[in-house]
Amino acid sequence: MQLTKHFDLFELTITHTGLANEPPYWMVERLRIVALGLERIRAVAGGPVQVHSGYRSGRVNRVVGGVPFSAHRLGWAADVSFPGRTLGAAVERLRAASPRELGAFDQLIVEETRRVLHCSFDPRFRSQWLIQSGGPGTTVRPWPRLTV
Image (cartoon, rainbow, N blue to C red; front, side):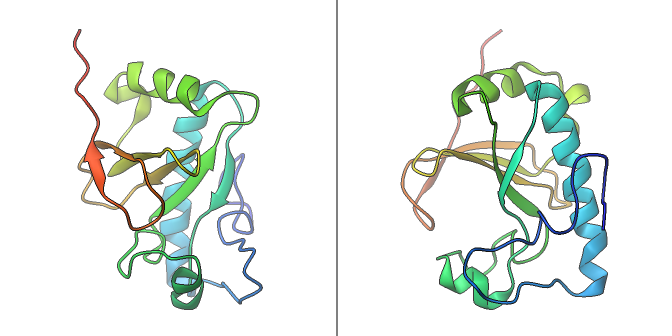
């Protein structure tokens, strides 16, 4: 099922664990919101976005070491990379974008170890930029504020 121009339900639910990972029917609309957010990120970053992890069932989330109330588990998040660009270069473009260009988001977490950007569109929309230097479940710290 195509959710937006560049993202479909399959890529937002794919898992390499071998476990079933089908979201409940009512969660598909949340994944459409995630896909719309990823469309904005794709446009601002200037090219394709590869989804590494989107929705996670409870079993999948446990197997991959996700936290119990992960935004992935709730259908609000995706971890992405930027083919042909470094994570740093893509993040620089995203950080330089105006709030209007980037749109509403809850958290964008640079996961340094995995070299992905965790993109959460939880409706709290806190606009948090964070960095996680360790693996899943490790401490997340605020991104230093930009000075203009």
